[in-house]
Length: 348
Image 1 (tube, rainbow, N blue to C red):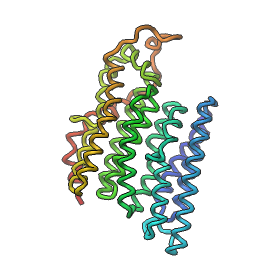
Image 2 (image 1 turned 30 degrees about the vertical axis):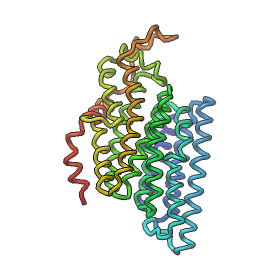
Image 3 (image 1 turned 60 degrees about the vertical axis):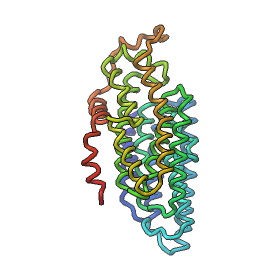
Image 4 (image 1 turned 180 degrees about the horizontal axis):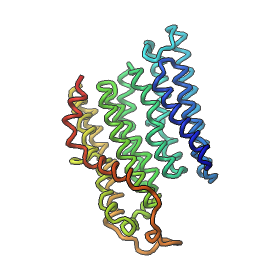
């Protein structure tokens, strides 16, 4: 892609998210979300592969549906309450519709079906943008409206953690596994949103760091299926020995970074007398842990029985810069000791 066009599209992505962040009016927020969608579509379809085009079409249709729902709900809110302010959502009907529209935008279960399919058709770089940056603007809106209907949030959260765990169990494609992992993590964030918005933000940031690291590892190994991972030890042995730690951090095992948000969320849910919800969420984390362990096993404990067809991939040095990978890997593994500082920041 032409670097000038790429720069314009990335600027559009940044501008769309910034407009949504800065807006207090529903029309401006909607405009920012639309800019976001329109800026990423050429990036998604740049390879002209039938799967990429199909993924782009699916993405466009779901995002357009969500945007139309959001616009409809904000107009309904203006009609019922006479104002367009995002933080003055008083009527339960538009608030619920907007919550569901934003859930569709980020891919929360039960409106998640587009996310694995879309991610599977994209290359790893655009997949990374879709899994991280594209979640920011809708999350900013969900945090601002502070949905009054607590039941719908808990149902969305629990369904997402369960489906995110179950859906990834039988997958062999890494991008689909990462999509289900994304759904499960978003479920954890939504569960605690109404009780501690700052904890949701902390979970979102740790999820970004861990996902960024995982995508970069797969990109360095040019891996899209579990079988490809079995040859990664010949390309980057040290990275291959560190990758299981990143994956187990995504699964939320101590003493890794990913344990911190899960631990704090379970503690918060227990404080709110939601012991059953906390138990179901903790058990659903075991489902996710299974497929992270499966990936770790494939990478470190199995050897590929023969060379992959075509070129021998370990003889070609990668041109990818490894500094971002090194920083994000260190952060994905080592940040748990900062948990006391995080708890101090989280207490109002």
